[in-house]
Amino acid sequence: MELKDLCQKILKETPFEAEVYAASSNIFSVEVRSQKTQSISSGRTLGIALRLLNDKKVGFSYSNTFDTETLIKKAVDNLKFSSSDNLFHFATPLPSPKVPCFFDKTIAATSAEEKIELAMKIEAAAYAFDRRITNTESASYSDEEYEICIATSGGFSGSYSKTLCGGSMQAISQENGSSEEGYCVKQYEKLSEFCPEEIGRKAALNATELLGGNLIKSATMPVVLSPLVSTQFLAAAVPIFTAENVRKGKSLFAGKLGRQCGTEKLTLIEDALLQGGLASRPFDDEGLPSKRTELIKNGILKSFLHNLDSAAKESAVSTSSASRNSFKVPPSIGTTNLYIEQGKTSPEDLLLAAGKGLYVTRVMALHSLNPISGDFSLGAAGIMIENGKKSFPVRGITIAGNLAELFLAVKNTGNDLEFFPETGYCGSPSLLIEKLAVSGE
Image 1 (spheres, rainbow, N blue to C red):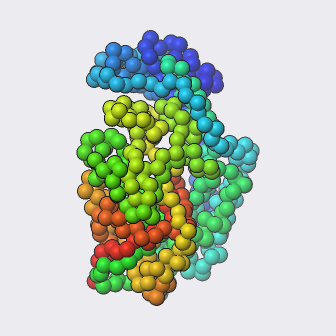
Image 2 (image 1 turned 30 degrees about the horizontal axis):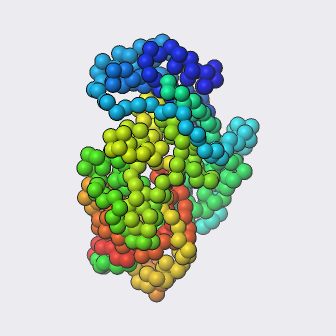
């Protein structure tokens, strides 16, 4: 049965106002090591979620089968345990923008043997990049094609399909008794864009650039955050921008709409309409048409992220930020293509502007960042900057500060915006931070 037909069938059988969410996917993955296949997996999944609204109460249920009768019964039963919500409602029909959600038919048409070869090319590229690459944890290729369909009793009905393919690599380097690991993860909309050599080389570079790293003396200094580290900070900051956390007093930006929360160099955008964005979509996971939202514009806090529920509670307009991590849970507030807008300065010129400082390429335990205070203290590693150029590797250090102060210390942004799948499709260019406390010896 087509997902659209399935959603409509469930709607017709439900006794109350309803929203049906259905998702199906085909996945394939292969992992290789030492040019030998370690594992292959593939499969098809189906998930259905149902929300019912009756007497101002919401009942939720889900299933991974076509047993619609049980699905509806569970949602009706769960209505009994739900608290009243006078403002809750489902999406009604609104024009959805034409978003280029690319569906690459060549992915399914490509044989498993050819996909295994792509994974092996990733590993081979890492070894070829630098003789100090002595081992690999794994190299992998994976792809997914999925379809999302949503229908509501309010009249909304929509669906879209999308494909993604990608690879990853974890390389190990050794030299003079020193050992380091480096990884790289990339995803693409089209198989024709897939570049195994890029993934292998990047993983090898990450594994070798910190070999022989030493401690430095503690100091407060200019810092350049690599695109990955900048993006990891941004991903950790997502809870700060959700309206639900703001309402509960769990955001350091609560009550600061319209106020300066960063330098004029800082613009933060959530854009589900981004051309080529890996998380772009025509509508959110409640059926609202996708939008481009400036959360921070030239340092001024302009908006928080809203879904239907938070927008109703705050008398605001939804930013179409409803997101489902799984069909097994109701939608919450999430992001698609969230990124810091890039500037015009090259990464090399950011180093020149720093003069003497630290280029940070790795941070650890960013999950410990406190969304209420913004305080952080993180293990880090990187490369010392001397005379505006990369000098020697540094490891075993700690960087500490406050996220609000970090935003206000962004002196410049690079022109090297990059998105990272492992951060939930967030992206950032390199950032020049005026000063940051670095603890070493």
